[in-house]
Length: 61
Image (spheres, rainbow, N blue to C red):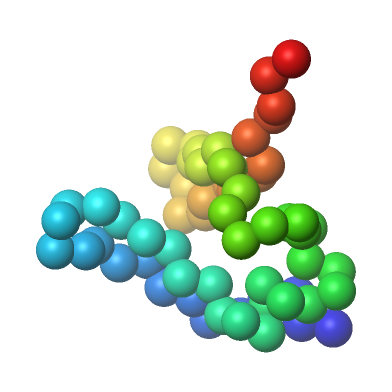
């Protein structure tokens, strides 16, 4: 089981930021996001903390 890996946050030439996740991490059977190639996520952080929280965006009904 792979529950951590060395990823990367980088800025593209068009000004957008991307988060890279290692393939081994994202394809692990216990990885929390499943089902498609693209998933809408909410990314948040707490002021003064150096962590990002990534969670599946709640579906609207």
